[in-house]
Image (cartoon, rainbow, N blue to C red):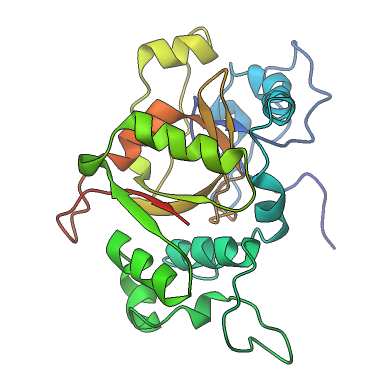
Length: 270
């Protein structure tokens, strides 16, 4: 029998902010929520972010403000097709199948029964699934898969673009439901919290819950223009819930070299 409240995913790291939580009943006096045990990949609140009380209050406010500003239009279709990657290295395949389904692109073949639907196992035209399962997929091969699936694709590496251009595309797809942006980034960058960003969001330093893993793909589900933050719909849902991240920090996470290919990471406009 499932026990409510026993397992809960925790934020990847400040200044990321979980976009949806049921912990709204916490008050300013509740510095440490009840969980004190590490279960699976979940760290207890006390170890993760004991001072980050804004976690409870601001997460929903950011979402509401972004909706009111009209920069969550792409969210609704994406969330309808939100999925968890079925293999630890399938973040690229899960992200792409989620976006392709949200855009109602016809896969040209049946998934199961009569249903025409993109599934991770159908995205094998550019790289064998066994290789992806073992090593993940590169930025270039993800772009190849998107083309192969029939999508209109523009790909940008960070050394061939600017953060201003990235912000423009994020804004465009956040105010429309006919395009989406996939970000290719290195999780380790989220360990590097810039003091001014931390101060802006938290007001003081705190212990960090750091993201694990290296290269990752995620669709961007929305944008908060006033705070310049992007909503990451992380398909590694067994590890991290959707979370808001400052766009400059996300750019920094994209602006590094993939050690496997020797090329920069970037983003894909579909």
